[in-house]
Image (cartoon, rainbow, N blue to C red; front, side, top):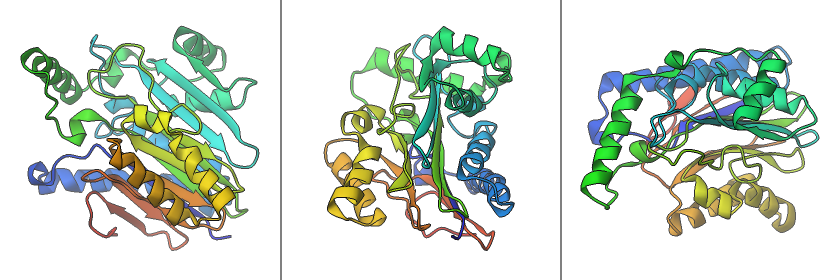
Length: 311
């Protein structure tokens, strides 16, 4: 098999007319760094699980993206993060929800993956992480003025009007990675701070297996980004796998149909997917999606809007 890795930094992109060349370059650089972090694992014969973990960690450490250090705030002024990882070899899965503390939420999900549990949330998840040696960081580590200002703007918008005129960048954002390793095993990892101004305790599709995260060697691995409630109600990630399994659709066909159907009912967003043959699909129905792919040639190719991926 030819190892391949795909990532996304969220379908909540800035409008093209407000994106400066300098900021666009920063986004491309962040995506490339994450691709290379995962690619190193694959080139050394590492597993798809380890590759997606490293790629997502790189995105969590970059405050440009809505996960880890760049996580958005709830309406109560707190950060509550979700993360999930799934191994396509045996459908082993681990997820955490509504947490603040672990420096890299995806490593908290990995700790759950290695346990008898599948999903832990809140205080119980944090206690579990401490018991299992997951590295923590103080709340100040995760704060960014950009995300705090975004919350204030959203609270003010709600005070003045009920109409939601925000663009995708203000509504949602997530990071994720999918990979197929040299043995043909697939894996998926997803991490997010959720939606700016979300209700405290709200959990999106990211840690819900079959909605925002899925991996099964028999079909595909998927990491989604967008309006989570739609992805949950329509079991988006699992729907792609089901269309491949029962209808015989290709990865590209199944992924495109699901994203198009979500868009038709108001489910803005996109996803990245890979199958056991190394085919990749990156459909989205929003204005853009931070995304990238890296294959055996080691060239990191990235994109933000509808343009072809560039090195």
